[in-house]
Amino acid sequence: MPEGSNSSTRDLFFKLVRYGFVGGASVLMYLGLYELIRHFTPLSVIASVIAAYMPTLLATFLAQSAFTFKSTQYDPTTIFKYLLSMGTGLLVVVSTVWLVHGIWGYGEFTANVVACLASPLVSFFLQNFWVFSKTSKE
Image 1 (tube, helix red, strand yellow):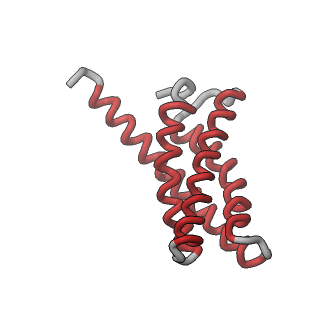
Image 2 (cartoon, rainbow, N blue to C red):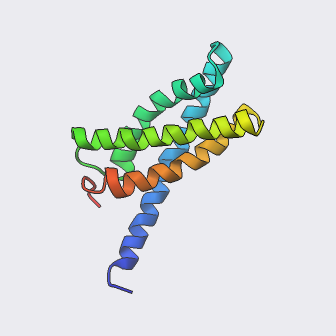
């Protein structure tokens, strides 16, 4: 095993743990907003997904860039790539909710929980190896 691979594996592991911690807080924020929107507005399931996702997006960018990836730059390219990675995450969330709730007939909450498990996997790899790969202190 090459020298430093244990260190890089350990660094990736702890980065994933931090990502999961921030992601868990984001999931709680998203689900709370989603439930509030569904309860107090006439928005549809999919419109509520999008409305809850947007403020969560901003909070997650700030937390992931500073805490998880220890990014020191907020240049337009990084922000644009982050938005693309999260747009991909949004597509995963919307399509998962559509599939699990709309097609398979499970409840809205169950569909959102499944979506909140699927989306971070895609987003972490995009953010770690593309978005923050050149701006991270690690």
